[in-house]
Length: 171
Image 1: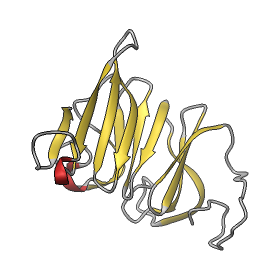
Image 2: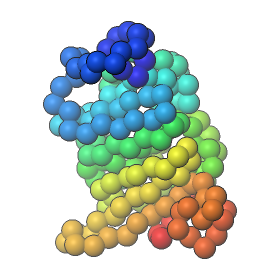
Image 3: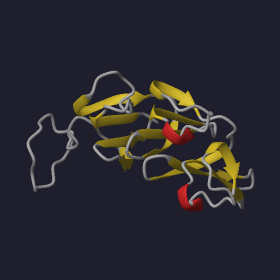
Image 4: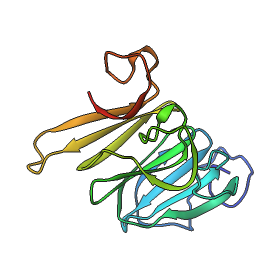
């Protein structure tokens, strides 16, 4: 399903996806793939068992638009996808275990939910299953803050705590 070519047959030859075009960024989860086009649409295909296809459907073997609202960035982990919008907000869909959606809840979402407490974000990076980081850029685009949230084993979020961060925290 991850190839997005409409089949489930494996191949060792690169395949062009003809159903989408003008792609400016790609992201990959454990069993799922995502593409962002120049219009700000995010497409997804692969295994969506954790809700990351923004539907209750488990598998998609070809790309389908899952987000059509001015996306500028897409990031994925094993069980979720994060979209940064042109207005600097971050939205997520999939499984939010260990507070990885930054909303203080451990829940599965099949529709996009906003990661609370973030503005001015330009880039999200995910790590493993349940942690995320966001880069905030100031108006002058010269400096910014890094936020982290989610799973925090071994202090991987860069905080002094070893507990999960329920909401985005500046590190």
